Image (tube, rainbow over all chains, first blue to last red; front, side, top):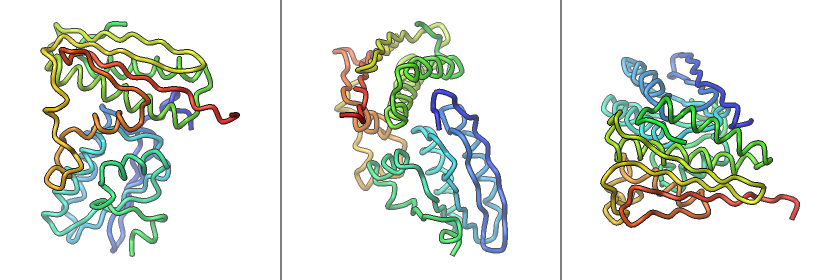
Length: 116
Length: 132
């Protein structure tokens, strides 16, 4: 990983009967945050939306990206859904811990664990 | 370096500064902290300081060497007071977009200071030396 050679954000989505997995690759900076929020909100029509956000290949997320996660979480909650996070890198995990967001955005080691 | 109140220009400047940092061999954790602080500083200058006014500029001075990376970001706004920013970790603010970025840059950077007006921030990250 070399933050100076930023990888653009790429989101891959797959769904099954348990919910949706959004795999985020690259970086979520100030300009990418709306794309992340849009993708998460596209999943709202799921009947009981469980959205697992796989962060294992994400190098960076800024405060704007965190805000996008929270906005999507609130929208999902209104439909009795939830967002779960998978394997953020140590720096992203530290951001979430410092801001107490680990209390409302649960973190799992693997996608399979998060889908249970 | 001077940019207009434009997030695309901010991103380009941020990428250039991170390339400058990389040339001195900063560890990834340091680079992450610097990227976080630059993004927050530039976004705040453009959004809160200059209110996206394209006629207003953001000025960035960088001083990067093998010991530390320092950045001063100045906008043309009226400034702010840190004491006016809510605590993002308070229960009632946990899900609100308020103050989280400022808190994070204070946690990730070694020095964060503001001028009296509140329209200039100085950010310093001392390079982590794994061989000491």
